Length: 94
Image (cartoon, rainbow, N blue to C red; front, side, top):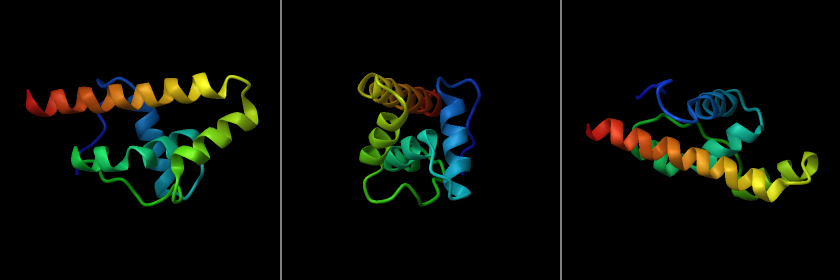
């Protein structure tokens, strides 16, 4: 399986999320990786099961518990994982 390159944007979120899922911890990064699991798996990453049935909803709930700007933070996190995936796709094809 593919390792997370530190050259890719958002690599720390993906790395942390993969670890959190593997260890059964619920976290922002773990839920974010669970949301992106189909795309990350297609890119060759080994994404552990976790995050529940609707990780996107749980991520928003988790953000709303601690952050008044949950909507903005949620969108920023999603944008970072999309950026990571695009960079990983580009790195694979180049």
